[in-house]
Length: 222
Image (cartoon, rainbow, N blue to C red):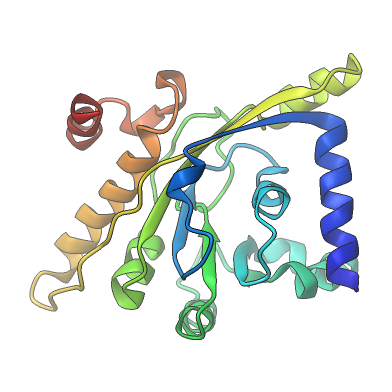
């Protein structure tokens, strides 16, 4: 009941403030378990996947600072938020996420770990690559544009809806980690995730990964 109400409220809010375009929807499987890896440029990013995909088996890591707000803790139960310490190795949260994935739930996560205030990609953290390698779940890269907080606020001030775009790329897998070269593999896998997101974004959004060799390779093969 609460969950349905919140989903309806999300649809109402997004429809009021944005015109949403989806590209590559065929890459998003209607069933099965996976990891959605996306860039993070605005507060409403977290709502976009509940807006577009009416699935109750998706969970989303959220910064621990929001846990102190009672109303967000209440929402978290219905929208499957997992509170994560962004600044330290949060083993408790990692174990919880792995458990949820083992139970067949899908993960929606921003590898950068925080919003990019420049709207372009910043360095990805290694947690996503680790979770993908441990779970064996395929990773689906998604590039979001138009959800920047400044953009949303400026358009609202003009009583104008913002143009928001989600571009979904093809799924790929991160191989299981070899304990003898674990650190190197994690770094390579993290770059792979970030570069896959980069190619689903316009050039101005690619940031740190704009000229990465893997990004250029992926773009040339498109």
